[in-house]
Length: 171
Image (tube, rainbow, N blue to C red; front, top):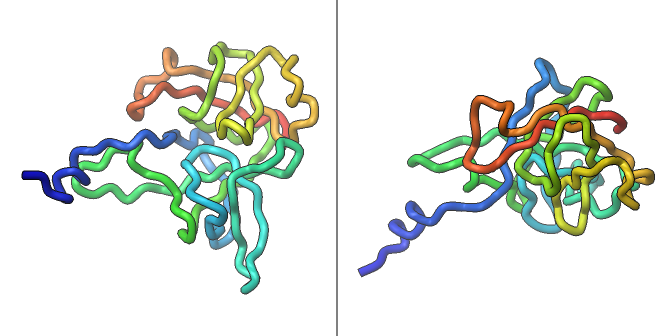
């Protein structure tokens, strides 16, 4: 016989994971409330305000908009894996402000060959960073651009998914 608790404890998520690598980071004061749907950690969001004047965030909708990294710390219980975590609509999330040539982070939300020296930008349609040689059609107009500075072969740890490390070129 099945139980709801057994299913909850044995089903593993497939959400994006990552790490912040900068010694210090700047964050949006008091974070932002997630709107428009659930958002995976270590993807990009845009900011706004709700009717009550509270700061909100939602998944980035256009590469030309100012973007921020959503990177909320996880509170792990009962052996939960990092791939189980996401930012649920209505929750308050930590929002990282990018600093050029300083902010570095790992993320599993990418497509392409993560070779050092390549560049990337975030694709709102796939909710992933596209790694390329700088000739992608959307790259020139993207408000946030990233440099690939490491891939999982260089990292000493994993979070259950392949990771790529980015450094902010422009924000």
